[in-house]
Image (cartoon, rainbow, N blue to C red; front, side):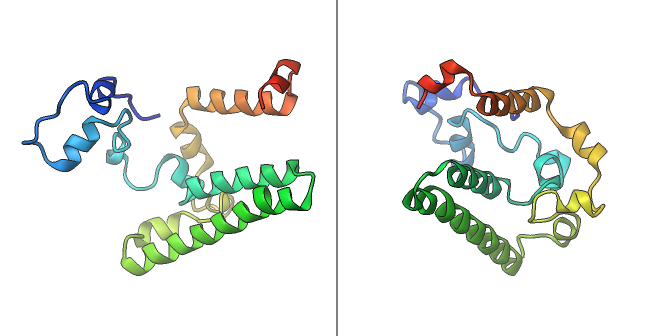
Length: 161
């Protein structure tokens, strides 16, 4: 997980000011609680990019798949399931094509990773041991715990809708 910038809250809430002498990207970063560039020194292939180049799109497609599995009517299936699945898969392919066309997708990243989740790991372009070494144990335990909660559905969880 990226480091948390605790001094961002007063800036974001307008309780403290950032010097206007700083460049715009620095001022913006000071108001953000997460430093998403904290690990830029690791290169372009690390962590979740070993699994897929578009993790955010496939995460949203997973929500669409969950919506499809939970839907009870055709309208719900289309609105919560098929719609998001199709939309986000098309968007992932579009972003991929656009980045390739504009030269933002480096040849190294393209040949060593995959748009399809786990494909690069299954066909040997990426190493499972490298992925395991880069996983944050706290994040992994949190994800497994939330998934277990959702799967087991304890009685008190039915109160949350």
